[in-house]
Image 1 (cartoon, rainbow, N blue to C red):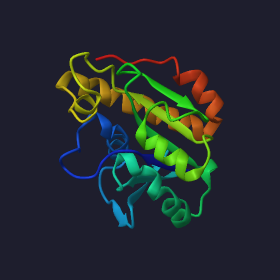
Image 2: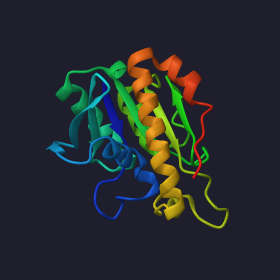
Image 3: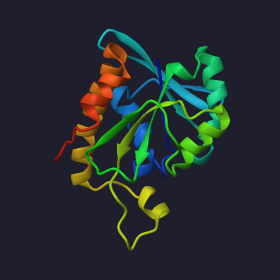
Image 4: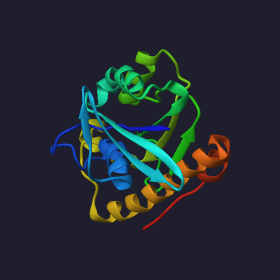
Amino acid sequence: MVVVGLGNPGPRYAFTRHNVGFLFLDHLKSKGWKPEKFFEWNKTQLDDHEVILVKPLTYMNLSGVAMPYIMRFFQVNVDDIIVVYDDVSLKLGKIRIRKKGSDGGHNGMKSIIQTLGTQEIKRIRVGIGEKPEEMSLVDFVLGEFSEEELVVLQKVFELSRNALVTILVEGIDKAMSVYNSAEVRA
């Protein structure tokens, strides 16, 4: 299984809400990233399953550009991929697992769907909370989490890890029935 976490490369974006995909992969494996053309990767063990972790380095809005390179490099097809990314329409503390669907207004997923020519892409959407009314969407997603939010986010990453193990062991339908209604708090 290849887990593709979405985000933006570089220190400017490292701890922003839009980098939840990268941050989740770092939660699973923080050291030893190997650079390739358009992405970097690592491997980890989740229970007895080896999982390949991939961060596209093409910036969020061009995430799809890296996908053909990723699929060719690891010799996988779209069924072997799970994409993890931020979702402004989900409350912080919640995740949503899906087998397929539209981009939901997320430019990274839009790029991937356009490049691969299918909406049948497994995904874990990580809630980052609703943007404040007085703030632009760009400023919100490119803003950093507060200390209190980071506490919740670490628990969300453990929840997401467990969901990933469930997908690997029992399938995505089981993971959706268990984790789509789960919520963590500080």
